[in-house]
Image: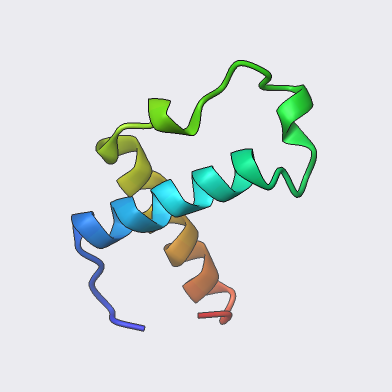
Length: 63
């Protein structure tokens, strides 16, 4: 994986993760956020989510 992550790619990762968490609901979090819509996450928030997740994965040697 590249060392530098651009904002657009980070936002795409963040949006995909949020959509997966909401639509697939693998952890059953929908019960805690019944009115949450994945579309409510703007690009800046999605980029922060995406870059944080990728950073964590790199730190634990998964990515």
